[in-house]
Image (tube, rainbow, N blue to C red):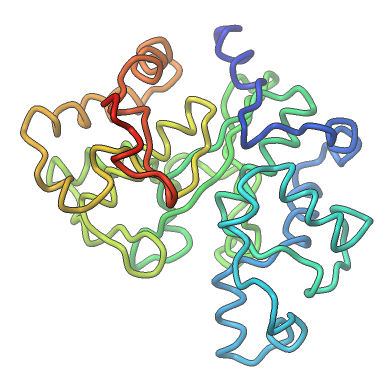
Length: 298
């Protein structure tokens, strides 16, 4: 592996910046099973919280009715997540945290936190977006994981922080095999080639379609470039389904070409970096507070 690439993934982004938590993160366990367990014991997935009210289990009984049902809109970065965890319980990442003192986040946010911790330890790490058929065998739900580079094994190793769902299917969450995870580029290209029905893939609980796959492709592209954008951020030129389905043949081919590069991100690292740094369509994003009118330059 090129030293340039490993050094790139040791760097932090605005999202994985460990800020004043660097020494604290370094003090956390090096053992990934223990580390992911600590993270798991500090948050509740928003879907788990929602289901708890249907099943009337302990979580619904102990989590305050007046508190946020999801912190995804608020805690976009690793230091923000940690600040809230310390505010709720001064022990920080710890076992035995009461449900009322946990943050409610999804897989993207847990992966960003894990990536920040590993980067603080000097380990090349990147967040990835795609789909995890091991969570639901009848469909491919969207999912985010981490990859860290093992110098000893000379390979990127997939780590899924969402240990609860992994254990239910008897998968090893600290070494998820590539064939178990469907990366966004693979999903896009397989659907475009007619190899897989687009209806197999779903974002959240119900969002489907080729336009959803295109946005997921950009989630993973930006994550590969150390820019782990929220799933609420979309490229300006395909912010809506209407815009996507108005794309021409050449623009769809641009997405095909991007996906082909992303199938081998290390081999094509320089080309991906060039696109990220120079292609405004691929780089400029709309967010809940920013729309087309804010990006007059494109």
